[in-house]
Length: 367
Ligand code: G6P
Image (cartoon, rainbow, N blue to C red):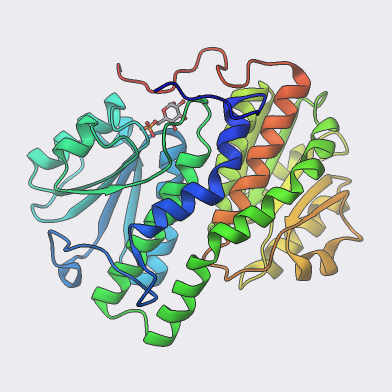
């Protein structure tokens, strides 16, 4: 049937607000509430024998893949190569029969991703599809399908499909880690608990909507925005910059915070807003010193952090957005939302066609 906007002005905002529910739906595929464990059905390969994993996707789905690389490497001690599909399929990269590749796609029909999957299968690679549309080509052709339960996504700029991909991928990382013996029981239980709480923490994050709207008012007339983060906050910075440019038509780019000194720091002055994503965790101090370097050059920092981060840096920065404190592993699931809202409100204030941005398509089924 037809999907309505549910009282929201745009599909994109409706879809942003659906995230607590649909992340929960996606999680329930893997989380056994009775046993309090994350279970993944029989994998068509032996996780203990893998020496690497490939992840291939396009656009926002490729950024979900980048977050997954950090998770799988950290939790399952398995090296991961992430590629955008248009590069993977034409690079003539050596493939080994029996190795495993994950293809991530909301639509399951993106031409480059589908062709990359067929190319990998032809090379004897075991294919896993993380897809939102169950009757899609990729869902039909993959050796294993991990379905996200985002429901129909209408807004061209992906939001809820992305966070549903993330929660599915963190379950994959934990399942791989358990199978490979790289996560001890105590860590497994703590992580499972943190993941089970994500839907309600994500609902808490939505309380910052008004705050993101008022920050957006200060961005309508800028010529560019820089996003920075480290660890899993780096791919979230990339996704934030993508969201921002595709619907506001204002240039945005993202850098790993540690790379600032190798170029983009030359851009910093009081005219360039910098969105810094800095959850508490092992990398916080490193990001904090990058923020200090930006402020020392009169950069206007919009800091997205938690209470401890705010206590440490709020005197330095122009704006602070305080998110719930969570296990650093699940932080990207929360930090994805304020950057969606920032892009959304900036685009609305600029008067662009938020749900149908110029030159873009929801699903790119031709090359
Ligand atoms: C298009 C959409 C993006 C999406 C990308 C990949 O560019 O506008 O939002 O991330 O395709 O789509 P997929 O369906 O494969 O996830």
